[in-house]
Amino acid sequence: TDTLTVSELAEKLNKDTAEIIKKLMFLGVMATKNQDLDKDSIELICEEYGVTAEQVVEVDEIDLDNFKTEEKAEDLIERPAVVTIMGHVDHGKTTLLDSIRDTKVTEGEAGGITQHIGAYQVEDNGKKVTFLDTPGHAAFTSMRSRGAQVTDIAILVVAADDGVMPQTVEAINHAKAAEVPIIVAVNKMDKEGANPDRVMQELTEHELIPEDWGGDTIFVQLSAIKREGIDDLLEMILLVSEVEELKANPNSNANGTVIEAQLDKGRGSVATLLVQNGTLHVGDAIVVGNTYGRVRAMVNDLGRRVQAAGPSTPVEITGLNEVPAAGDQFVVFSNEKQARQVGEARQQKQIEEKRTDKAKVSLDDLFEQI
Ligand code: GTP
Ligand code: MG
Image (cartoon, rainbow, N blue to C red; front, side, top):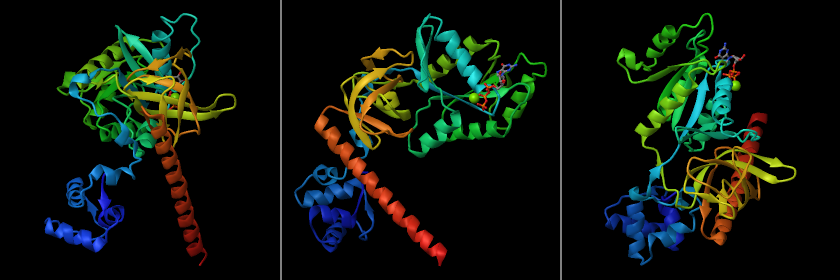
């Protein structure tokens, strides 16, 4: 965070809160001691005491956002889209993911043993697309609740023989809240009762209007099981990614989000990371959520060892001290010592937060008993 309350600022400057309030008043800012100060006010006050705002605020700065590289527009280049598949139960999300993967990944990877790492990348016409192999809702809810936005495009799967169902609507709402474009995949077109017109009709009620009907939503009809329409869908994904102008700087320290993580008996903490900016390298000093370490080894979605992973690439890494949580952010540091300091500070803060949470719970329990 880059805000402080008046009394926090006073404490950092080793001054009386009243004195700071007075100074603020002279500067035309009326504030009480628990009021959050904006950056400008903090800077003004610091100037008064001859210190820079950075010196004062830095001590507290363990928010990983602060350690991400700020990019200049001219350093950014195109990156692959990150796509999540959402939709109602049994409408064919998993089958669709499998058929995309089978038709596109194993095609050029004959004999390659694929490993499940929670995300994978396919290539179509020389362009890559990353699919998150997580239940779409989880990707949106748990990750978004942690402030992580990983998805660029949502594929809404609707079975042509079943139409819009409650979770279809839920998925639409998640995608809308995240402000990501939606491509509708009308699935199970091979089925007897398939009625794509009805699906389109029902979706207009949720402002998803096909281009043919004057709207701007892309609809693709397909059969995941028969592997029909998969290429059309990929083509549309590439089209939408182009419009979105998705960009990143591959020449920066990496940052991104944890897709999933677990403890492996032999390898220790194993985390699947999605690199969102920069390039991740073996040996990088990294803070991941409330843990840290050095990237010991990296494995890509095909189970191969890699040395580097660029923007929008999912990789599985080892080398962290603890197991982070899905949705946690990660940032690479140029300075290993700083990574350790930030990592330890974040760990400490988490322990303290847990303690206060526990204290809260036990107080509540106490009241319950009374
Ligand atoms: P959950 O993960 O439970 O929400 O379901 P899902 O959306 O992943 O659906 P899944 O891919 O498991 O498919 C559900 C059922 O529909 C399975 O029996 C699939 O074989 C079948 N199915 C999926 N796609 C098609 C299709 O294009 N045509 C036909 N006929 N059946 C399909
Ligand atoms: Mg499924």
